Amino acid sequence: MSSAVLCSVLSRYENQITILSEYLEEFPDTDEPVWILGRRHHLNEDKSKLLLDVSARLWFTYRRKFSPIGGTGPSSDAGWGCMLRCGQMMLAQALICRHLGRDWQWEKHKEQPEEYHRILRCFLDRKDCCYSIHQMAQMGVGEGKSIGEWFGPNTVAQVLKKLALFDEWNSLAVYVSMDNTVVIEDIKKMCWSPPQSSSTAHSSAHLHRSALGRNRNTAGLCTGWKPLLLIIPLRLGINHINPVYIDAFKECFKMPQSLGALGGKPNNAYYFIGFLGNELIYLDPHTTQSFVDSEENGTVDDQSFHCQQAPHRMKIMNLDPSVALGFFCKEECDFDNWCSLVQKEILKQQSLQMFELVQKHPPHWPPFIPPTKPEVTTTGAELIESTDKLFELEEEFEILSV
Image (tube, rainbow, N blue to C red; front, side):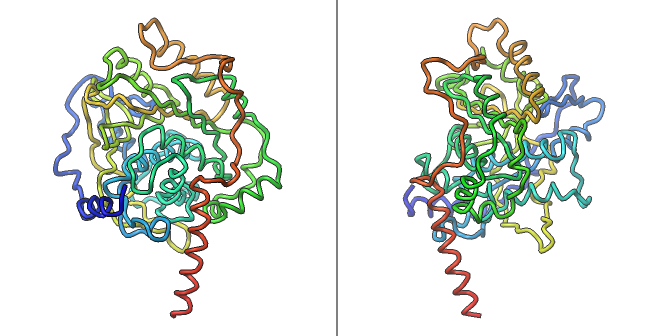
C-alpha cells in the first residue's frame, strides 16, 4: 500500500470511535443455548453469566498515537489492522487459558494476578512487546505484506507462528495446518521436541532482544509437552460459505479447546467466539482507541481491553468462506481429547469435510521439521533489529535535547 493511499485510509479512520451501546442488539429471549469458547450458557437462566464470560476475553481494537511502526511508519492501525487485532485476541485467549485457566473471570476495578498483566503487556502497542502491532506488521513483511496492508487469516497465523518462536515465557508450540490437513504425528513431534541449545537460543535472542525483553524466562527451556496453539486456515466455499459446513463449524465452538475463529467479510475482520442458533457471536476490532502503556509498577489500565457491552452477532451465511479455526491444548491429554472430538463430531459421515485429521505425515509432503528460531534473512526480524537501532538513536537525541 502506497504512503498516499495509507494516509487517505488513516485520515478516514483516525477519529472513528464506535459507541457500542448505540447500536448493539441485546440477546433475544430464547431456549436455545449460547456457546462461547467451549462453554454453554442459557439466556433464560442467567444472561449476566454470559456477558461476564464475554467481557473476560481480551478485546484488542484499532489504536492511535502509538510510536510509528518502523520509526517512520503509521502511528495508528485504523483501517488496516483489524485482522492483526483479531489474531492478537485469539492468541491472548490461548495465553489466558495457559496461565489463568478457561474459567478465569475479569471484573472491573478488581485486582488481577501478575500473570494477567504480563499477558496484557505482550500485546501493548510498543516495538518491544512480543505480539504488538509493531512486531506483527513488521513480521508480516516476510509473508509478503507491506506495513499498512490488510492481512488474511492464514497470514496472521503464519506471523503468530514465527513470533511465538521468540516468546520463551509462554513457550507455545504453534502449529498451522497445511492443505486443510492436521497431522497428529507432526504435532506430537513438535510439542515434545527438546529445547534449543543455549548457544542457538542466545544468538537468536540477541537479534530480538527488545521483543523478548519482558518475556525471557527459563520456563521456555523446560522439557515436556509444550502447550499447543493449533490454527487451521480453511476455505469453506468459493464466494460464499457452503451450507454443508455449517454444523461442523458450529461444533468447533463447543469443544473445550476452542479459541474461536478468525474471519469476517472481505477486508473486514472479526474474532468469532461462539454462536446462538444460526448466528455467530463476535468481538469487533473496528473501534479506534488511544494508545495505552503500562504503569511504572507493570500493571496496565485495562478498562479499554475488555468489551463491556453485549457482543455483535451475524448470520453464519454472511461469513466470508476464508476463515481460521483456533484451538488450545495445554496438555497432551487435551490434544488427544480434541482428536477424539474431531473424529466424532467433525468428521462423522459428511459428504464434504472441513479438514482432515491424519495420524501419519503424508509421504508426498516434505519432511516435517519442528520450527526453531530462524536465522535472520529477509523476514520482519531484520526490520525489527534496524528499528531498535533507530529508536536507540532517537532516545539518545531526546536525552541530549533535555
